[in-house]
Amino acid sequence: MSDVRLHTPRGVRDLLPSAARRKGALEQRLASHFSAWGYDPVVTPTFEFMDVFDAAGTAPSAEQLYRLVDREGQVLALRPEMTVPIARLVASRMKEHPAPLRLYYIGSVFRYDEPQSGRLREFTQAGLELIGASGPAADAEVIAVTIEAMMALGLRDFRVDVGHVGFTAGVIDSLGLSVKAATAVRHMLREQDYVGLTGVLEQSGASTEAKETVKALTRLRGGAGVLDEASRLARSEQTERALENVSVVMRHLEDQGVAGWVRIDLGMLKQADYYTGIIVEGYTSEMGYGLCSGGRYDHLLERFGYPAPATGLALGVERLLLALERAGVPNGDEPERIFLVSEPARHREACSTAWRLRRQGYVVEVDVLGMEEDAALAYARRKGMHRTVLFTGAPQGPVELVEGERRRHVAPDDLFENGGRGA
Image (cartoon, rainbow, N blue to C red; front, side, top):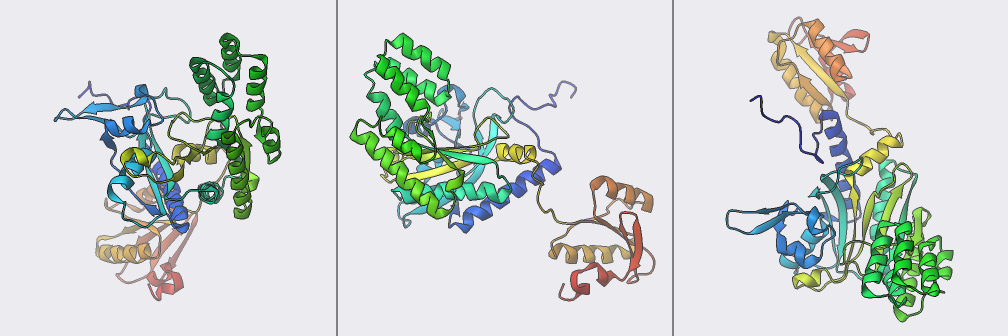
C-alpha cells in the first residue's frame, strides 16, 4: 500500500466537509432561484458518444476532451459542457413537450486545460436553457435570471457583457481579408489578444481602413451609446439587424430591472461555432476570468434532427464560490448545530430528542462513542457546535445545556421551539 498515490490528479480536488457544505448550499440556492423562474431540472449522463460533440462543434477543442473507448469499441467523451447534452436530450426525448422548454442543470464537466486559480479540469456548471423561443425577450430572460442569481448569492460588483455574433462576424467579413487572416482575427478577438491582433493585421496586408475598422471594433464597449458608434461600422443588412437585436434586448433588460449590470461589447466572440446571435460573458472585479457564459444557438438542435431556436447561460460554481470568498460575502445562514451526549440510561431519550430537533431544522449529532463530559465538550468546540446537551441523571429529568461558557439545567421540552408544543 506504500506505493498508492494518496494525492489527486492535476486539475481535480477533494472537498472537505466545510467546503462541500458551502458548495452544496450554493447549488441548492441556484436550483431554488431557477425553479422560481419556471425552469425545471434535467440530468444528463457524465459521458456521451463522441459523435454527439463532433456533430455539435462543441466549445472545447479535441485536445481538451477526455476521450475513452468502452468494451464494445465505441468512442465516448466526458462532457466538456452541458448545452450540447441537453440539446441531444431535447431532440431525442422531449419533442412532444410543450414549448418553450425552460430547463436547468447542475453538474460536473471535464476539460483538459492547464490548471490554475479558478480553472480546474473537473468543475461544476449550473445553468439554464430556454428552448423553443426565438426573439429578444427570451435572450433577456436568461440574462436576467443569471444576474438575479448572482445578486441573490450576494455578489454586487459584477457586470455582464452582451455582444452579437452577427455583428462582429459581419464586420470581419466586410474587411476583404483572406480566409486565413479572417480566422486569425476571430481567434485574437476571442482571446482578447489585441497585441496579437495588431500583428495579424500587419502580416495579412490589410488595408489601413480595415485596420482602423478592427481597432474601432475592439473599442465598442459601454452603454447604449455604443450602438450609435457601431452603426458607422454596420455596412450590411446582417450587421444592421444585429445592432437592432442588441438594442431591443437592452430595452427588455431595462424592463426586467437589470440593465444596470449590463455592458455592450460588440468585439466579443465565442469559441463554440453554434452561437448564432446574442452572446454573453459575466465578470467580477475580484477575478480576471468569467463567471458566466452563453448566448443564442438557434441551429444546434437542428444538428440532432430537431430544428428549434434556443438560448441559455451557464455559471461556473467554483468560480462563484471563489468570487464570493474574495468579495468577503458570508457563507449565508447555516442551520444551528447541536451535539447530544447521554448516559446509557438516557440514550433512547437523546435519540428521540434528536429526531424532534432535526424536524425543526437543526443539525444534530448524537454521541456514539460514550464520551466522558470533558471529551464531549472538547469535541463539540472543535466541530463548532452551537449547543451541547448533556443527558445525565434520572430519565425524563432535566438536561444540562451548554452554550459557550454558559451552562444551565433545563427541562427537555425547553430545547424545542415553542417549548416543545407542536414538535
